[in-house]
Amino acid sequence: MKILLTLAAGALLALPAFAQSAVDYCARARDPARCEARQAALKNCAEQRGAAKRACLEASMPPVDCSKAQNPQTCEAAEKAKKVCAGKTGKDLKTCLRDELPRNKRKKQRSGTAKAAAK
Image (tube, rainbow, N blue to C red; front, side, top):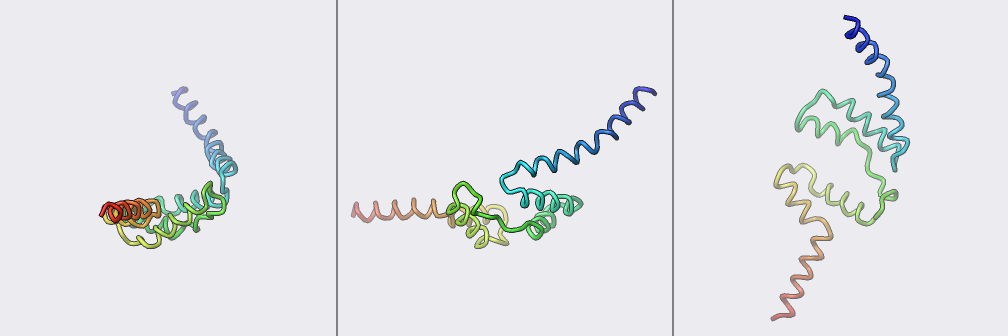
């Protein structure tokens, strides 16, 4: 009984440490404001599942700040592709994103020019 009581007391005392670690994690993030917004969105949408949770998270999250990304042009292209493909799921979403990303468009253009040069 003493062991169980000791474990319960230790768990209760550790709760503030868990809450503090999330704040510290966001303080060290590249974009602390977005990290905090993500944590809040996860907390607000925790009770939902599936498509409802995905919609809740998308509505709760602020847009990505591509100026803080390692490659801003790639980030902007990815955000544009996400907007174009909004509302699609599963294989349709993957196909749409694959077709919309500029890296794949360049490959298609190169293969098209190679075919034209071969003729």
